Length: 255
Ligand SMILES: [Zn+2]
Image (cartoon, rainbow, N blue to C red; front, side, top):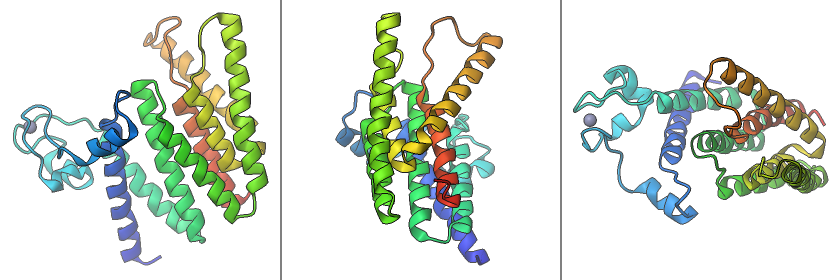
């Protein structure tokens, strides 16, 4: 990979990361998918403090953050570091994926799936919901990639068994505890991961995500950050476990 291509991959990844973080910031559970799409295009980015419209260069923290030290150009209000971190993560991911995957279809699949899972994790963490369009896009992406690689049967069974298993688990939980433990968003996301990775990978995804969630609960309790029975979104843990499986599966064809 030439130096120019590497630079282009980093820059393209940075722009994609900027778009993804904007989409997460402008999401609200009250918006319909169409309203969310409109909210992405209009209005332009403004400073929360001074309401000044940002210059286009300042909306790309990858460039403006070190320059302005993460502050507004006009009123020096400190911006959150989240979008800067997201841009760097996506930029590095794009570079690594383009270097490691020789098949362009695999590279596009991994970058798109990673982008969707990043949005799922960020939105579920803040709003305790997983937008349906993200899960459906991931589901169709998984089925399309499986069809191209001749794995459509495990993918279809993955989607079906993923949804049914979590539905059954949620139903049993509701019968025993008397309230909801898992949301429908988690079921749709698990089904989409089944379509991306095949049914054989689902037990591993469930095991790893549960382990991650339990570790997070123990750590948060030790720090005193959560109370007894306070809800913890499961989507981010499913997204992390699913993402690792998708990358390993596509790179090394495990199943
Ligand atoms: Zn400002």
